[in-house]
Image (cartoon, rainbow, N blue to C red; front, side, top):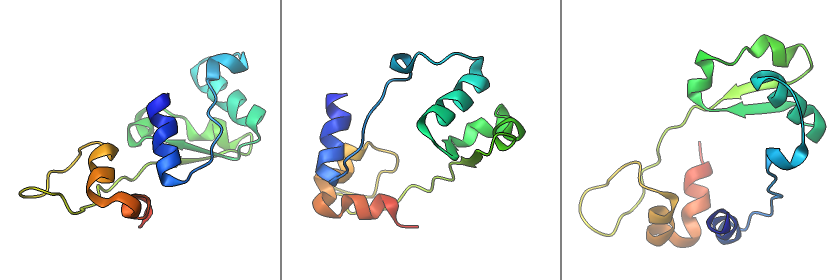
Length: 108
């Protein structure tokens, strides 16, 4: 958690970080996700691409929650040595691009 908070600070992001276990919300796997979204007032649930294989969007849509699946395209950025190496951590990006890092990972 300390690393996530530090990365948020480097990016200038001010986000509340919650643990679902602290919310004491019940339900089966999808029901619990829906209940967490409702509890937090969310109308969009962002899920990894693999979620397409098991998330039933209809259940979310029925309660007014849109499901968006990740469509991640790894950005190419300057690295200090040699050819570009893809899929390293955000720490590599920060050390190589500094203040430009957030813009690199958020541009479409």
